[in-house]
Amino acid sequence: MIEFEQVEKSYQIGKRVIPALHPISLSIQTGEVFGIVGHSGAGKSTLVRLINRLEDPSGGRILIDGEDVTGYDAAELRAFRRKVGMIFQHFNLLSSKTVSDNVGFPMKVAGIYSRREIQARVDELLKRVGLADQARKYPTQLSGGQKQRVGIARALACRPTVLLCDEATSALDPQTTQSVLRLLAEINRELGLTIVLITHEMDVVRRVCDRVAVMDSGKVVEMGPVTEVFLHPQHATTRDFVFESENIDRDEMHQDMQQALGRILRLTFKGEATYKPLLGHVARESGVDFSILSGRIDHIKETPYGQLTLSLVGGNLERAMQALTDADVHVEVLR
Amino acid sequence: MEELLTNVNWNEIGGASWETLVMVGLSLLFSVLIGLPVGVLLFLTGKRQLLEQPVAYAVLSFVVNILRSVPFIILLIVMIPVTVMLIGTSLGVAGAIPPLVAGGAPFFARLVETSLREVDRGIIEATRAMGASVRQVVLGALLPEAMPGIIAGITVTAITLVSYAAMSGVVGGGGLGDLAIRFGYQRFQTDVMIITVALLVIFVQLLQMLGDRLVLYFSRR
Image 1 (cartoon, rainbow over the protein chains, first blue to last red):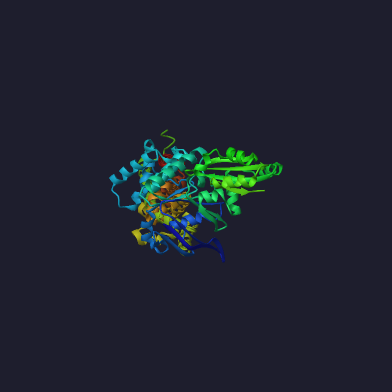
Image 2: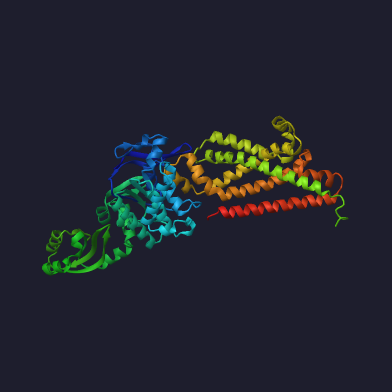
């Protein structure tokens, strides 16, 4: 478990002290995929670098499995960092080393593995990330997605318990992003590794994260399970991110809603309810007529969900809403 | 042909060429041995680097700048007492080496610093995140990544040393420069001058070619 207790960070530029992170307290459970989403400059990059102490906090404590990592001396810190893998937006592979040597590099740095152990581990990891046949190539000969796979293999070399992902998919095209995210989810599932992932794309959070913290100007403005935060965003920043990821143009949506008749409801289904033929049933029973203004059915990690915006006219609205609520559908009245 | 090169004593040319080779070779070796660690230190103690140390950087940088701002011909003369103290004489091939190193090492140190700065900061960050010590970052990541730049720096330094070595002829340094000054200039033997210059040009060309090949070999970009 990773716990932040009133952790803050400020930079001193000349005589001015510029706060980068206001006191933050949060905890990340062992084995979960924790997302931190925010615009650039929101402080998420700093936050994640505090975990492996690439940045030192200005105040507060960071506990990892109960141990305060802010008090480590240089040698303890180096030993600790071996247990925390990290991957980067621009991969940061060594161009002078082959794929195989890049993956084995952290083990060489650790200085406690024999050459045979390193070779065996490198082969195993390259197989896991699907690059067994690229072992002798140099990074420049690889595509972006392949480079990130090498980055992932390298981060896993010393069998870490935590993996930090710094905008790991931001430099990749959508298809490659998907395959890298799938790999991360697989690693999380099979190795029980805790993953802390920072991104500016809500879509990335939706696909792999269990919980998410939304950051804005050095503060965590919203935090919770992805299903909650994504489907029922409370803070304006969170809403921006969700709308952005769903390609919703809010002006257009507003126009559509003005033209629609009757009441406007937003229904949110989660899990099993997503697939039930509920709408027709409710319409028949309560006598309301509906038209769909917008809708989407997708997955949050493995949980299916649906979100529909309907305009309803006639019939017994109360009864319709009751029937929907009874069927585990979350109903919001928009107008 | 024989009539055109009446003053040329090929034995002497051969000997002088060998002396130049020895002077450049040895001074290059020492310039690299001294300049490389100094360059690494300049880089590490610099602003926002691993061992940021403003005072150490300022001192180191000042010494390097002093040595680099003195014109080499002056450095040759200024260094005479130091050279006598170090190796007993300021003449001949041996006497030329200390001033050559004094000119070459700081020059090379700056080139090393520059090529280290060109290494992506992300690579340093990634290596630190693995739990590497500063030594491991330098030896395992920085130097290998900067290798093409450093090799190019060695080439440039070697070529500079060829010209410095020729200059050392003025203060009795030996080699092709000495030959050119004593015979070509002071005795008006134009043929000797032409031959020495031609040899120096060929020498520099060969060095550059070798350097370029090595850079290519070490580049994986």
